[in-house]
Length: 432
Image (cartoon, rainbow, N blue to C red):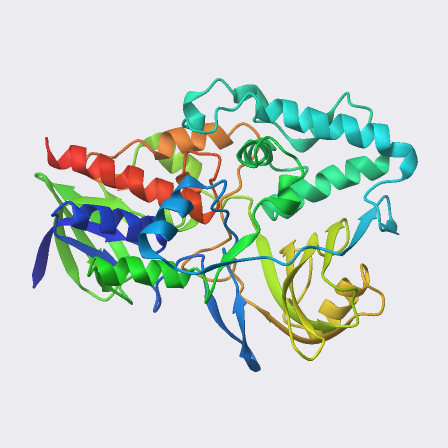
């Protein structure tokens, strides 16, 4: 038995739900197919494993109403609660092999100034309200090493710069394009310090609260556990077949799934050759985000550096004096991200007296529905990938934070922006 709609949206993360919401609001019949047993995509909040009185956000969570226009608009529309982070009071850095309270040796302060100014000046070439792929920025799509070449930075400042890129990308900073970090700096008001201070709000109850409000208020039809196996286009229609044998037909389709998953879906006719080439292997992003229940660390702490973990941020404080710290690293940071003793050793690189009481994390790289964190490109591909992926394939449009063409790519705001753009593209297709 086949169901027929105006639009079928594949993927119930923010991009897919926003596209479905906007199209439903315009009077289109829409169904959302989600491969997993939950909505949210790479936003994922649930009780802390073994500490069910606590909540952990294992995926995207931080936002800024001041800087992110889509977040500001959606929060105002649905009236969901947002809370600001507590201010940092203590910090620890590991650069040039030394644990420090200041990010670089004092003798390298001129180097730090040059690096920050270089990043700020590069970001000022970016017009934040325009699609990135339409701006003349290809010379910024280079490796981190090439970007700082010629600045004559000392080892501590070099480590700090690489630590920022690693923190942002969840990958080896020497292997990835630095363009994403430059674009983020532009998004932060052209402030390199924005990586530390600008995104300082989170949704009360997790980002899923906003997503569920979208689903409920627009009465979206969302079908969970519908893993798509084939997308076939024939005679003005798109036919979707799932691994479970379900069939859905529609006049158009929004593909809002992680780009690492796309090559595992059979497209007929095949995708454009350039898309296939760029999707042939997994991207470089191997981000790890863990949540640790910790005691015996300085109050409201922040870390950054070249330790096993790229960074530790305060999640929230508990009444008994413990706190939940949010850790960032990559697939090489820990051999077992859930091994409490191994995690404790990593945390003690920054806080020698720390005691890790409990650990929780989700392995996005091992999850077959994601096959990695948010997309991170090699040098020379950051702009080209977005340009190629935002070209529709007849009646199939692609969406998601992986393909967003704004400075907020890889954030919730970028997913919303991509979903809105996909809805506009589908509306144009439907008027042909």
